[in-house]
Length: 347
Image (cartoon, rainbow, N blue to C red; front, side, top):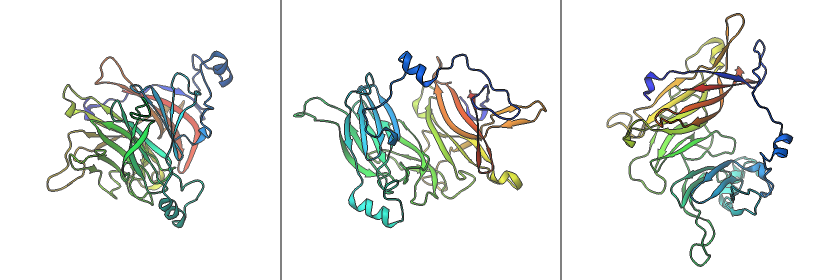
């Protein structure tokens, strides 16, 4: 799927109501009560505070549904999520907590360890990262459980810095994916959330230099709100695969009313990118981005644009080199977001 020759095919299903737009009617609509009655939904009650769950990932090899939450990691049975879960506490250290409070952060809502990154490394280990009370920390989660005499319950091992891998705060946006045992993370890398970037690093080892986007360069990333990241095979050679990052950002270089506008974006980097030799040292040399145009024509011929990207889902097809992406967009007017939403199909 050559990036420069991408064609954006848009179909829409209006999920909200927008002025001048006729809402589409879904073929099937079920209320929450109807889902419960039909057995299509099961409330999660096993976790004491399920509202703090930051990340949910299925580990098919180990047979776990892993939930990253506030100060804890839960391992749930995907066949019965309300069976007593395995709880792995992961609190920030006393020093991390004290520094967080002294920096003026809220002790109850911010100075905790919010587990934001949960990615599969191999059949036995996950890679997890938490905010660490504004001191991000990562570790390997060993998911093996046999007998306590052999491996014991799941445990966290090999702790390391989460800078450039996990945001500092619970409300800062993030998109991550493991590709070729390397972590690609779109996040902020400083306490003030003023240095957003796309980072690549090797968890646990340093086999090749880490890469990042150009810091403090608005033409690369301008106040981005990261949404999702995916690895997409390009050919039969895995080294030629690409990683795609979906996000929204402020319109860079615009003037007048457009200077406050948000644009939905997709960016791409090559997995075999090793950075520049003389310029762009330890920086991406294959970073490209494009605007995602998702709009609906009105009766007067003027298009209504949906520029704030909220979520993205990848649908694999028979051709693994050409998956289909579905994106959920909403409208924005300056700093205000409308309730109208639209789903666009991106191929």
